[in-house]
Image 1 (cartoon, rainbow, N blue to C red):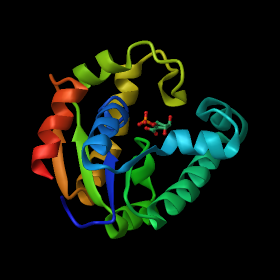
Image 2 (image 1 turned 90 degrees about the vertical axis):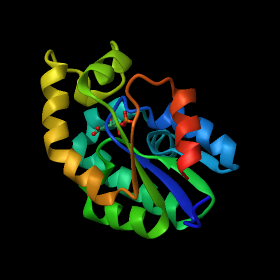
Image 3 (image 1 turned 180 degrees about the vertical axis):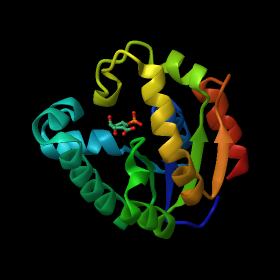
Length: 169
Ligand code: S3P
């Protein structure tokens, strides 16, 4: 296992960061933390409510604070939110304090996995496909920039992807 203090998963919504991360954490004896969940627990509000009340910028501030706390420690597997890489401080911290895996997913698998999601504010739009394409154009280079390892997850279950990733770490 890589000697970095933490393992960090990045990638778009629907890449499987949470489902793969849980399994991988168990396998390597790391403490699994989903950064979105952590923000919800700390603030006592859902991601949707945070977006509604303080906007995306307010959410990003809370996300940054959560990642700074989580990555200050060690022995964690942190599943980040799809937009966490937008912030340069987050990217620097991820690289300094973690081994970063970019979980890739194609648009088709992404749409299938996200189904009729009602929890993700950015997806509450009539043309999800277009939203996901636009997010990818901006974010894909950032996921690559921050990643130590890139792995595609299309056509795999979370268990399969976790097993494959486990062999590469
Ligand atoms: C977001 C992704 C979500 C969550 C929020 C914003 C994004 O996390 O942080 O809804 O900007 O892509 P997941 O990638 O875990 O769905």
